[in-house]
Image (cartoon, rainbow, N blue to C red; front, side):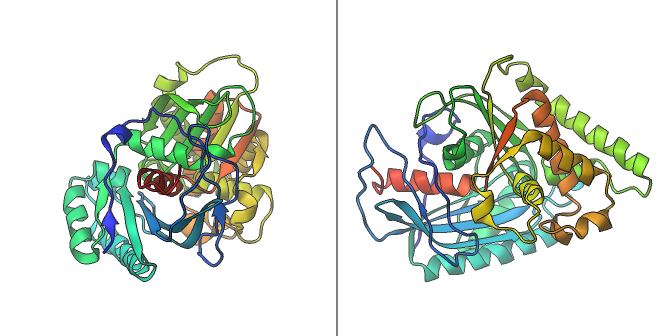
Length: 370
């Protein structure tokens, strides 16, 4: 039987010290195992080895993602993974509810996850749901149905916990340096901005954060973009950026100004997709993208190019296709709004985040890492 973990009282907020070593994580299709090093804890990296399998499920507004891993002497080994676009938040902005079609898509994906948990003999799992379930009037009803039909106990986490887990999962990819760092996660229904103090090696301290109610799904549905007239598309894109800038205003006024060596790290489908375009990849390659450092000017140029394209043109681009073409422009608008308030020269790209943060938490709490 899978034990479904609930968050400890200490993990309910974003503040805390985290640590980790820079490494590549495993491929999303689970075809090859990959080692992710453990974070050093209180000056020690000693590890107690055992064969328990741990799992993390992240049900977002757009995607359903699963990672299954086993601890190893070098960290943890990803033994299986799954990712599917389910668009749980489709239509949520207009109705305030998760639609029947979205529920069916999500339950279909979670049924696949449940089967993988059984086949991999997972003993401890944590499954979280984020912005769509936080907003939806029928969010709790959906959670109960998921449990009845799949056995997966989803935990609707707060925006604070979402930010904490994202930082815990990806901060190891921050560029070395002593300047202040901003970590962000562009989701389907929200965007989390987290200012961290990472001057010393190891665990950064979260010093400020904001969850804005704009993600690629919510922003796309709130601002129609794909007009036939290019001038109308440009105007719509500028309105998108303005909406996001307004939402970012509270933290923008608190961010440190005129400091040298500022660092920026993003974890989201937006940044991994744009990084793939930066490298002119014909198909997505996680091993190349996770940990890549890209000039921010290149990301702005790609955003400008995509915002000038029609839907059909974007669908023809490698690493975008039909599944992401309608949402990627909203992601570009959010990314540019972030660059406006945090003018770093380079952007670190992470294809890791909440799931990896969950796995680290589970292993540390159960004694898997010391």
